[in-house]
Length: 80
Image: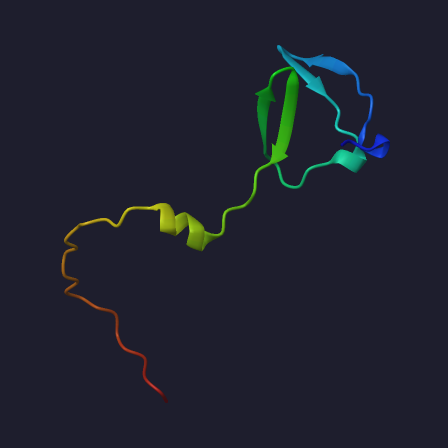
């Protein structure tokens, strides 16, 4: 159930060939990107969640490549 303090009347306007709205400060989303989707007559705007590097790497398939041998390795560290 939506509370009255979660509702705000906004005006639609044109930005070039796109229709746009100004998002009031109390409804601002974090980040620079959002996901917009339609459910019937409703538009849903959701922030793009930053994916942790570990989760991103877990989605990738391992690569099966034979890497060439490195002949000229860098010098090892020496304690002085």
